[in-house]
Length: 234
Image 1: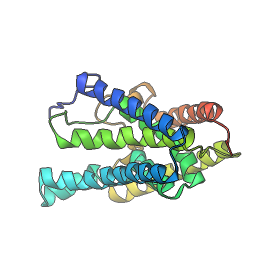
Image 2: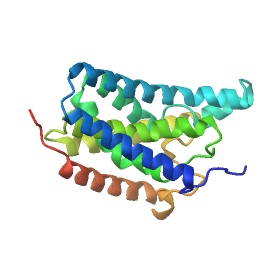
Image 3: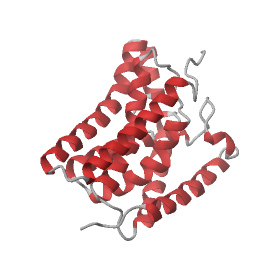
Image 4: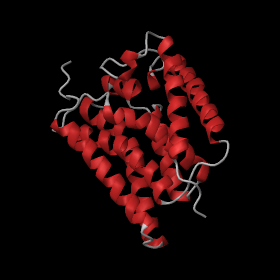
């Protein structure tokens, strides 16, 4: 199957630029003190868009491939919400709805250390002429926007012990999703093999070495993100 999407072509670059601009504008607006009602509207809009993006993935797969056996196989292969980007989108949505500190904390670390990498090097097959392109970037751009908005805009910052909690969350995700992969015979989270398209995984060694490399990189990014995070303004 030919892959129409081209990394770092104009549509991809525009999607990254729009993501950056929205993150900066929303965070600056939140810090300007617009009032809780207006901030609540923004929180619920961003959170709802993240959930819609996650929910639309299997729906669009069925629309494209039909509801028959092939469509069901494609959904099982690619569209169940077990990728890290799906999980962090759900966590960030709940954090936005409830102003939950723990979910905002892990959403910040996973969203910027993980989902942001998917924004830069997408495992995406569809170009800008297809709806899947926009849903992909709604989710993979929306998660970093939500993470920055929560921490720098709303001041829901990581607390003491965040690094250790992030390590436990990450190992828990790996354990749960690898178990799911073994049960259903899939490769969610790319934990059982590398993606079929070029990504940062290609520079991390073969399986299972790249899983160890990935964790070391992730923990390093967590550490750096915690160092640059703002302190509690309250």
